[in-house]
Length: 204
Image 1 (cartoon, one colour):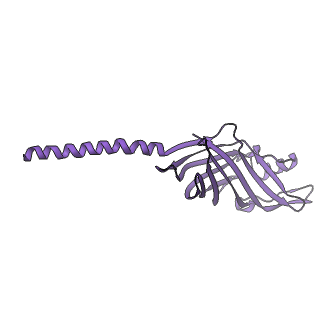
Image 2: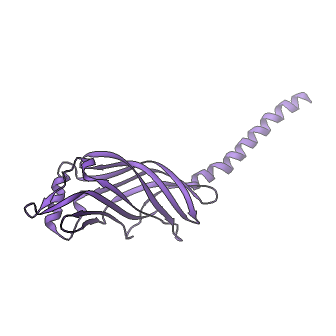
Image 3: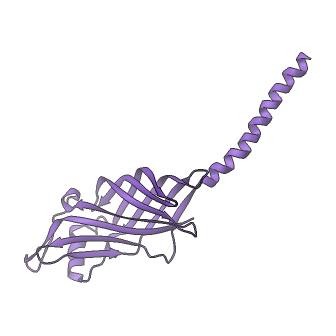
């Protein structure tokens, strides 16, 4: 009897472990996935500023971005990881080519052609079904200068399971070693404060 008992217990626990592994591992795989920008979706990165003459904005709809979105067993977003967004600085355009060219010069686009954002961490709050407020901490690199920024991102899981992220964040040119440019022989001077707005839609 003792011999039978000693053989049965290890077999029982081995079978139990295998059953749990088969049940849990697929759930973990399904709970997270890498999402990339949805082709043909309306996406943009907008840089907005002011001057002593008028407000201005530059917009790009060309960028590369992807990230891992993790959901729990109830399909509630819990975190975002390995997220990166890259924009070619010269795809930012305003309504005035002279403003664009001066902006490219002060952003040192020849030496540093990319604006890059790398996510560090997130804190997710559920607002309602499929709607979340994500406090994101990450590194924003402009003109070769990297700064840590914290921003609020509104995240919506759409009916087709795509994910839309929107938000705005204020930065200062001086934080990135950029001197505020002037135009029209110095009569138009750009302010130091900028607002970055964004909207991106992602799919698996």
